[in-house]
Length: 490
Image (cartoon, rainbow, N blue to C red; front, side, top):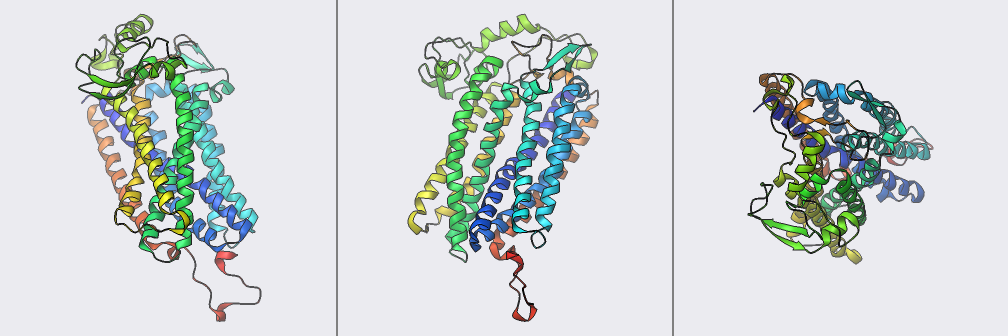
């Protein structure tokens, strides 16, 4: 493998790994704050127990997310220094906002929430929960604004060979970001919902103590999961229409649409090898004219295929890479504008399919627990526990599709925006040796594997411990003083 390929593998592994923690933290933090709000308003013990139990799991996951997220910042300068110099003037602002505003608020109020249970008034403590929960969403907003600029550069002028930002407002209100943010947040709630359904369903099936806690948690997760999938469908349609305008090659690849069609059919599933750009050996089961509607809200419009788009891209952005030694073996070689078709085609379907399965498991869990019922079959805990993985897989598949579908660009040209603002991935990598990249790849993968073992151990420990493992024991009568209260109830 060459440096470029190794660097892409490293960034892909660390980023996908980190993003396993991110959606669970975002979704679970909001749900924990909502449950705590319910406890403050009603005083019901089960809501306090739910807050404590799910809050403990949130803290384990949050800590792991912080550790794995720090590496992301370092990678820009480590393996992608040329990219960092190119986008630095633009990325500096949103990343600084994420670090100084969102993460600072998030960590500060999370600390107050952790240590303020028996020290702060109830409503002040609850306000801390909402502060750090909303800050996680703000953090996601700034990160997605930066990522969306890579997908659709706006708010810049092209000076001295690199983009210079002239409007932070344009970057933060990029229509690509405004479409990505609700979609990503809905995916986060889908992850948190499946987590609640899986863990609570397993405890409920065991018929142990605190059945009211597990039933409430399961049904909360079920309803949130269904609502999240509905939002995912709506926002996904919006994103798709934008991508047909901004990155037509990505969406043609997602459909294995090798030849232009008018109207264009939507491919449900393909049989054969979709790796070739001519698709001569591929047979697909299609829905006639649906792709035209998804692209343009019209059942009759044309959708361009991969082969025609190749000609357009070559006319706009060149047929060959620059003859630059920094490009290594790709210097002066023809540019392949077609992303990895199997990854984009099947990644798109895995994203939708796993999301639908997750929502379906939520609906089934709601039905099986209606009117006080408790599922008794041995298949039920296997189903709900297995269902925890489905939105994680859907989220990961969606991001892999999003990032690999824009290749060979690391900064995608804006078809209606600033001329000259784009960057090939081959131009973005640092001048390193393969040995150096192999060393960091192996080291980081090993460390991440060890961290994964730690997270799974802690999660398993507190999940199996249930409510009793996170609630403080009641004080004995001899330990009480006048006016004293139980620790868990202030």
